[in-house]
Length: 201
Image 1 (cartoon, rainbow, N blue to C red):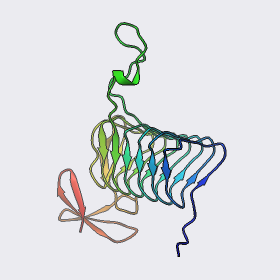
Image 2: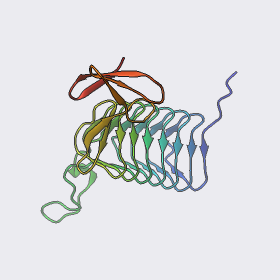
Image 3: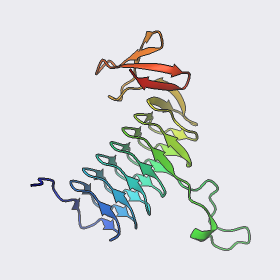
Image 4: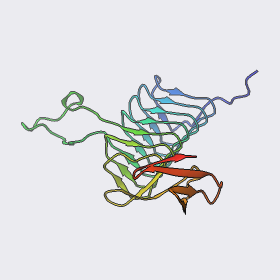
């Protein structure tokens, strides 16, 4: 017999009837979830967040207050999106066409942000699509991501650049020589296999 709790959706949230919300997930006040969205199990979508049409969100994710996740974003399992963070979808935004007519959905091609398992996007960070954020990466608060982020990278700044490596606990790793790094929380070891790649030992 299953003991999983059904999804909790508060009355002020606007959830399209075609959206699929996994068991144990909570959708809080003033959230808007558009058509075709898929949200996994045990997720939290905070007050005022926006989830665009067809966005896919894995299990155990946290989308904090007023985050904007535009289609066609894809989030893995255990992803954290900080307050007021933005995942964009238009490389060349305009309200009107060259002739002055209002742009319609058919006048542009949406491109998305893809985020790997366990990665975190800090408060008010902006990810400029199309970019891939690697698994367990950490984007600092206020950063503007304009290019792909490797697994386990800590990126910060405008535009965002890698400044450290982080482990699965989310804290910076300590270099111990021979291209090895240690997590001060878990004691797990990681190896830098190239200038831009890190893997768990």
